[in-house]
Amino acid sequence: MSKLTRLGGVLAAAFAVALCLAAIARAQDRDTQEISSYRLTDAGLAKFVDVTGKLADLPGACDDDDDEDDDSGTKSIDAMVAKLNAVPGAQSAIQSAGMTAREYVVFAFALTQAGLGAWAAGQPDGKMPAGLSQGNVDYYKKHEAELKQLKGLGECEDDSVEDPDDE
Image 1 (tube, rainbow, N blue to C red):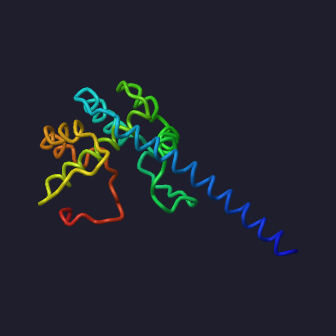
Image 2 (tube, rainbow, N blue to C red):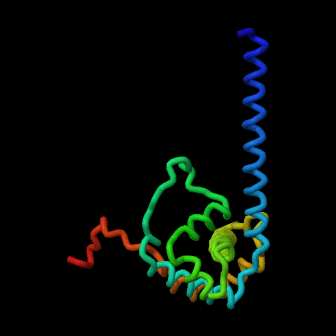
């Protein structure tokens, strides 16, 4: 095989990788924009809390099946929605609260993003990171005490770790 043929193959592979990375970046940009433009509301929070409680009660909802091909721990909104919809009973639990799986996932990310923004802004000389919704950060601050009471709602119990209070 000539050097020119090998170089052509390397360039073709590099071009294919660049196209894939560009597609991933565009998807992440769309996800980031969707999350940043989502507005947290009292009605949305009520639905989110309702869905979270219902999902925690579903058999299999707490099964941790790590994706072998995804070691980064990050996924697109579409991938997370698909995984959520794959849990038996999840779609009906979400719909019964008046949400879609996508709205549930986006709400969770927007709430997390707002919490991180509120925390960052509250640090000495802290500033809210660029691109975050000031309205969502304000919403989070306004409801911070209520949101702290929700901590643990929908979390899965880890039976492999012993609780020292059980002794």
